[in-house]
Image (cartoon, rainbow, N blue to C red; front, side, top):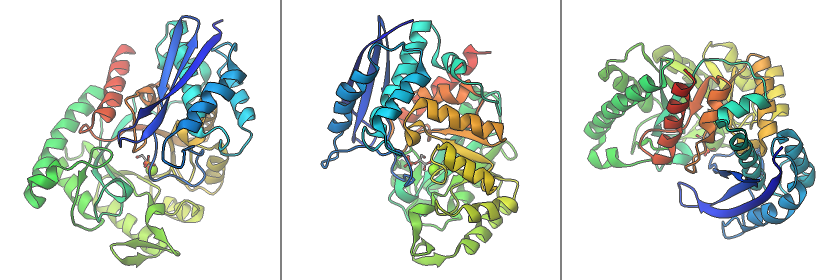
Length: 405
Ligand code: 2PG
Ligand code: MG
């Protein structure tokens, strides 16, 4: 047993330079720290990110340093589910709006990291003691986001993320392929739009196209795969984040209005043309039926993110309506590690795949790599190799996957 002896929250910055919460939990001589990320295209049912009127996070920090600390100090750091239950009860709201999801997830994951240290374990090994979740793969697919649009870039491209997914079980090989693909894409973008455009970097490290239609990023991605000599060895995946361009009953792309049926036709034609592994949030976050209609017409994984917000109740609804074959897992969407693991467990017991994901405002924390690896998740989605806070997570995955061999 190792008692929680202290909890200290302080302010740090995320990759967009915005203030965020960092929490350190001390358990006797051991400690664990988690730096909390922050989204831009957030689902409306996500755990609340508590911010002051000026964008700082001082109230969330105070809540950790006073209310939460008072509640859980002295508890055994290994009692993850009891600690999380105390935090949930102390908050008492449906979306962590009293304490702030950014406060609660900070503490919850820092507790797990401190507990792992106390056990002399790597976080991924310790996580396996907390939950028994059916694996999808030995190592997750790398979802490398190489063309940014939507809310993540100043670009007319409506879809938020266009990802390259090397088809290999080896993380090292996937990262080597990613470097080759990145160079190929750089050449293509520089030739088409100029070197200045090719030097630009979106929130998640992708290229930012100054013009083009929804199809352009898929064409450029397929070209990069071809030029790299990886035809048949690399998939394309998309996160449409369709809520971000849904307005007054229609999807608005470059001034044109599209119905859900129009959009479904677009996806089906993209699936025919390109080697697509999955499509995330293809419709507005409340459109369970539109998700289901599309999923019914394709074997490609339709993925819930804003639709399901790492929330077991929303996942259960999505499973009931046959809306998805995979879900995005973002611990800060739900606000505690135990609830995250519960949602993952439920997903896998219903044969829905889990793709663990970063946020567009990230920190240098690499915990999500351990989470994805621990449970043999289908994917780890954490941007491109053009931004350090994303590279750190892929590198961590590479390291732990070789440790475990
Ligand atoms: C998403 C995420 C991460 P954000 O929509 O999947 O890529 O973006 O963190 O802005 O919600
Ligand atoms: Mg998403």
